[in-house]
Length: 259
Image (cartoon, rainbow, N blue to C red; front, top):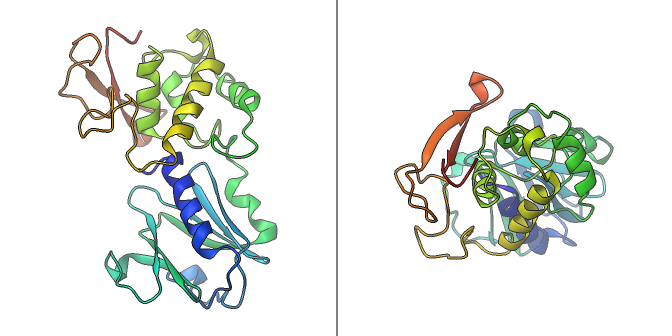
């Protein structure tokens, strides 16, 4: 699933192509918004909040979430699409560029006054201009008995971390994913380190947590269930963890380096 850095970068590319330009065509391929036509409007800006994207015009906000398979592609008007047409959920044209939203997990067109309904439930945006670490710490520590992995994954606490980031962050901080938030000595330090990781990775396609971008060397633990710890050589472990059976996520950790 795309995480906060990928969504931030997507918003940046969309903003470069769309902001300040008049939309010459809009095509929303979901039943609830199929008749909405924003052509003639000028895009004010494109921003991200955690994993959510907002394309704003003076009157409306196009809200999308990539979920597992979604992507926005920006290309010169008239060039061939890079995914099957049936997977397109939104098409936005101006006089030079075309933005195509494929397989979007969420797509809705909201009035500007209603845009807040898409983001009110979210915690502070880890890559936003108004990032508030104090508020994030307050929210994460509000449930001291909750496993730290789940508290950091919860977008209501802080918006932008996904499965890969939290697994890698907990390894770097030496914390087992099952550890209670109340047993973490410095939650602020953990969150601050994670925010820096997102910030470093947001401008590069090859995400890395180890300092290496060579294939197979980018991660400490995530999806390395058959591997050994790069630090101590211990066989890595994997399991699932969730607040309920239908919301379990894969966790990866070193039982020696993470306690």
